[in-house]
Length: 221
Image (tube, rainbow, N blue to C red; front, top):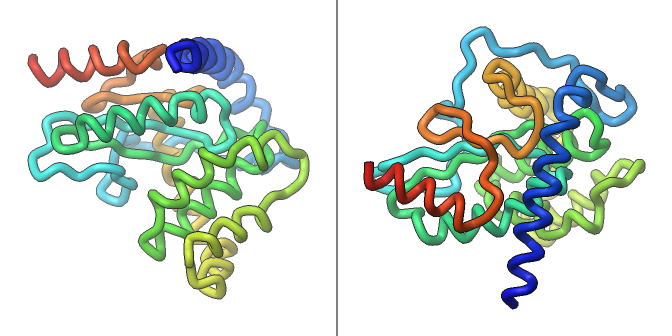
């Protein structure tokens, strides 16, 4: 178990670094066939908005951590269990927020984000968020559209499929994903995952221990 934990940390650090290095290239050189969108930065970008998806909502929040993420990003997948462990530990004190930032180089990143947003319309955002990350190896890095796979997840989650399909194709759902992207671009997000702590962008922590230490320092400050 300790060896697995060490391997997870190594993967998170290596893949996060790789994603950051390629972030600018991917955003500036979108592949139209891979779901790239011509999204412009928000004029007044904010790390978190009232409409943003909160994974925890403590009665008295002492800290807000925002992640701009891509469901197809391997570095985001590597950070997922770390974030889950942290929010289980600090969820009564820290607000954890997930925001969409699908990278144009990932063919199914934008459809996955729309699937999560369509699930959110049936109060199942967190369940779809978990499903997309825990199954990423089944659909990620594919050159084929995987909306049928995402529809399968919706069925497993017990969603109303007629409503899910309508929402998946709804321009307002796509617009909601793009709204997060616009904020991210306006905040100079160049790759995923990118974290903001109380509105300030931080380097992606390379381990659970490093992230925990950062949170403890902020909470005790």
